[in-house]
Structure formats: structure tokens, C-alpha cells
Length: 149
Image (cartoon, rainbow, N blue to C red; front, top):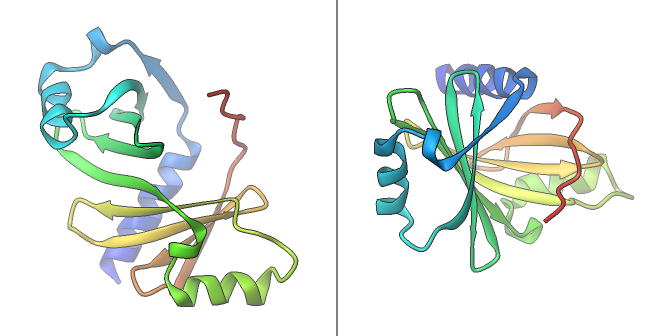
């Protein structure tokens, strides 16, 4: 329960926070080095600052990954794009039951600082968050700017 409250709080803060783009040179060296150790093939990294945290977004083999570091350089969360078909069965069942005429636009797998895994599925510009077993626990509505990659 404590983890769900922490995750819910984190998601809420992240959704209302304004992100600011950062230049590579302005990212602390320990964060850049940490990312390169974890993902040596990462290139074209997009950096943003959100509520004092630093976010790194990149693609490897066309799979988008986002890392969130706190201001001390400690990894808080890893988010990796997955296929909607790779969501847990219960999550797919929840979406099919509640949105029979809708498709999951995007899906991702997230791992927080405590090693807890959870999933996110976007349906009609709303993110639905599920625990590692696919149990729904919250939704997050936000206005997203269209990605122009």
C-alpha cells in the first residue's frame, strides 16, 4: 500500500510539473556517466528538468526508454516502451472491458527506485496505471504535446 501511495504521489507530481529542456553540458557529469554505464548504446539523449529531477529520454533499437534521476544523481525510475500486447493479462482485460471500442495507443513498463514494477497504458490520451500483476490502481490525465520525431 505504501508503494502505491508513493507511486501515485510521484505520478501526480510528474503530471503537473512543467518540464524544461536541458543541454547535455548542463546535466551533471555523474548522471551522464551513470546513464552511459547502464545504456552504453544510448545516443541522441533528450534531457529535461522536472521538479528538481532530471529526465533522460532516448531510443535503442527503436525502443524508447526514459530514466528519471533525482538531483543527487540517483536513479528514481526507468520507463521502457513495450507493445500493448505485452501488458499483463489483467491490464488488457481491464482495458477491453472498460473501453471495448478503444485501442491502447502506447504502453510502457516502469520500475521505481524500490524495484517495484508497474505498467502504463495510454487510451484516448489518458494514462492508466497498473501494478505488476495488471491490477488497475489509477489514471492520469494530461495534455501531451505531439512528439515530432
